[in-house]
Length: 156
Picture (cartoon, rainbow, N blue to C red):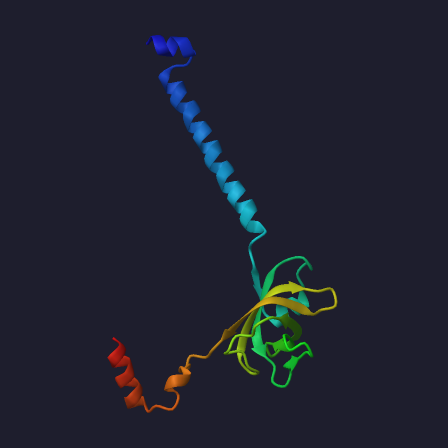
């Protein structure tokens, strides 16, 4: 009882103050985490969306679609490539400097991470090549279905 008199608060009020302080701390941590993730979030666009409503030039986004056949060009430096990503409705030119994934070919799916420039070109920092549902590793392409099943059974 002497403790409660010294602090000037009853036990019920002390618990209420502690609850309010805990709630403020939790809300503050949540807001801080949301603010930190806001700048790290990478939004996904398809070409028709990015053409209709382009993101801010400094905003990191992902562009997904199909690499247009005949659009792949390699620059003289041998590292920079230019190609067009399309979704059947719109086309977006893309530039990328770096190592290209082995599955990246014309006519395949791609997700490019980067930023849109003012001139309408997407500058990619990273490329993710997508394969179709019929993907088969190179080592197994020449095998019959029976041989492939035998190889899979051996690895289990």
